[in-house]
Image (cartoon, rainbow, N blue to C red):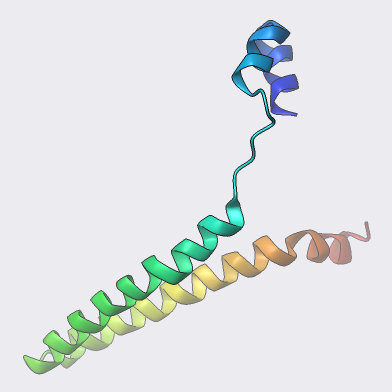
Amino acid sequence: MLTHVIQAAGGVPVGVLAAADPGGTTLNTDGIVQFIVAKIVPILLAVVGVIILSRSGKGQWSAALTTGGIAVLGIVFIAGAGLLFAFGESIAKLALGG
């Protein structure tokens, strides 16, 4: 689909685009998401935990609670975006009657 858009917009010859993508390569988005969930998220949560523990150990409870609240809000926004990504089409069909 993208090759058709590029051809229509720029007049790129068909042979050039066919040579650029010979096997119809795809991006493994499931693997990327699994990697982020398995490797990146625990590291970020550990960093937030260390920050909260260090601030509360110094007696800065207000700063620790603020950091914790911001982290929880961030997790809620990311989870909401994931739900909209997963169920967005069915929600739009339900709301718009499509």
